[in-house]
Amino acid sequence: MNGNEEYTQEYFKDFGVWGPVAIIAFIILQMFLIVFPSWLPVIIAVRAYGFWWGILLALTGVVIASTIGFYIGKSFKGIFLTRIFGEKKMEKMDFWISNYAFGSVVLFRISPFLSNDAISFIAGMLHMKFKKFMMATLTGMVPLSIAIGIFSEDISRLKSGLYWIGGVGLIAYVIYIYIDYSKRRKKDSKS
Image (cartoon, rainbow, N blue to C red; front, side, top):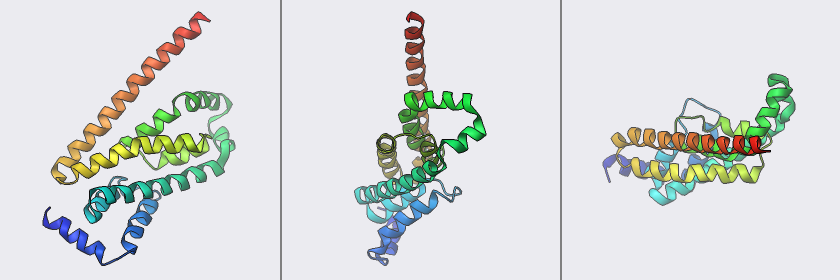
């Protein structure tokens, strides 16, 4: 443990019970302030409260923020998107949502360089089922949070670690879509 971590822990101890509340509030606020990277609060939480408590705090904040974003997006309904994209593109989006939405949300959550926040609004707007959305959110955020917690012990390794996580997640998802799409084309050609 280095001096910075000790300072961070002491700083948040002064807040008492309001320290964890402040971190969760920061994660929620971060959803609307795109200037802060979504992984920054995870680092702060881990440095302030240790590995497991920090990750639990960060995931709690992400679940609350994602829920708010999802329901804000849902309040726009499909009418807003239909006006912007038109009926034909909405049909394609419906196909994407029913077949690839889970993986898309996982990819956006696990990749620290994609917009973690926008995906909540978009999933709500496109009528993704909330339970499926939240499962995908946790499927992506749990490993990302654990990796950030591990890499944040050595900040110099953090950047390369985040690139590896994002890159592997993106490659795995592209391979999955390619294989799945190929299977669907073969199946359609046999019908």
